[in-house]
Image 1 (cartoon, rainbow, N blue to C red):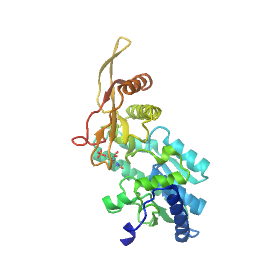
Image 2 (cartoon, rainbow, N blue to C red):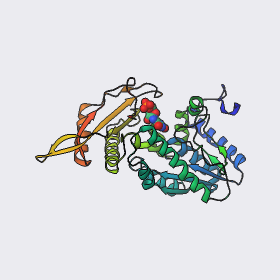
Image 3 (cartoon, rainbow, N blue to C red):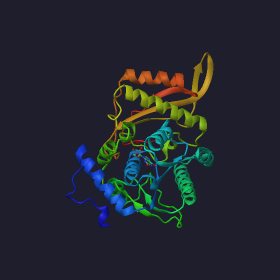
Image 4 (cartoon, protein in one colour):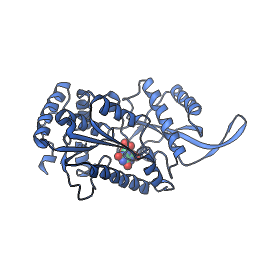
Length: 326
Ligand code: XMP
């Protein structure tokens, strides 16, 4: 499809002024496309869907309904940030769906990574479709498709994609950033006034923390992933590494080992720290984190995260490892 190909003479958005120009052109184009119809958007809180939401709010205000599904696999503070930014600051029409129990109940006892991904993807579509059916008169579905999604996967967005909706929900697509590269989307987001924490967010997989709580997900181990990830992110930010290291996170594998606390034997999990640099995720090198910072993170994890008796640092590059653990 020709409108899915970035014209060779399309200027790269490299300055705030060019981002402003893109924003004003898109607002006109969105108003022309949408008229007085209603639009629906699955808002994950990632940079792409957040930028699309902010553009649509400027263009058509409350004709946009955003649906934020909390599947229980989000990072600490993410659902709260989506509500704060979009509902409280931007006055968006935001439906927040607490689907945590529903997802975690479906995932209970499932250890196969592909099966876990399938369940998360299917459940997400089901929850979103249920919300969509409750709304009257929606004509358009907005998506945060960006240019690499089109180039790499022929337009099928792996992580935000709500394609696969039931036939009766046959919406027309609105994809205002589909010809932009990630750095351009970030520049547009910055100009739209989104917080830096959203604009410069590191890549986060669609199945969320689910792929970092390996094997069958349990609520307590998931909590250990979420809490240790929050500590890692906080300490990286304090050390000035935020936005400088490509992707960093913790993993709590489905494995226990012996330990000792107050003279008593424990049988607990390790937390693995992973911090990698990459350009396009096809290969990755390991970030050389200062040893003192690693020790600080270790101490906080031992103090603040329940059920953990070891902290490990992953030295593996891609290849032979992948970035994620599942
Ligand atoms: P791997 O683990 O394959 O990851 O080296 C490469 C990049 O892709 C992200 N990733 C995913 N993103 N759904 C996603 O949306 C997934 O299932 C998924 N698995 C990996 C990963 O975080 C890294 O940035």
